[in-house]
Image 1 (tube, helix red, strand yellow):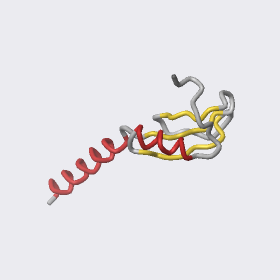
Image 2 (cartoon, rainbow, N blue to C red; image 1 turned 135 degrees about the horizontal axis):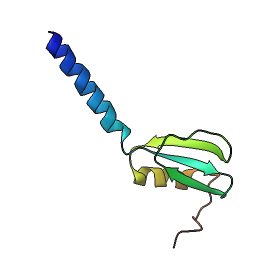
Image 3 (cartoon, helix red, strand yellow; image 1 turned 90 degrees about the vertical axis):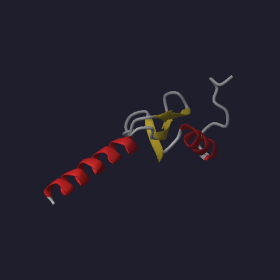
Length: 79
């Protein structure tokens, strides 16, 4: 019984670690005037004035950024 509980705890830890990888957030950056996509959980302080997420894929984060009304329609650095 003890080994079964230990195995369950180890599987839960591994699943949690796998879910933590590949998460994306959309953040509003006042210094650049853009909405950036970041891969770490942002802290709203200083130039970061809002965050939205997490999203499971970069495509989901890009879609969300395009629907947030305070984000510029086009990224000025995009070609």
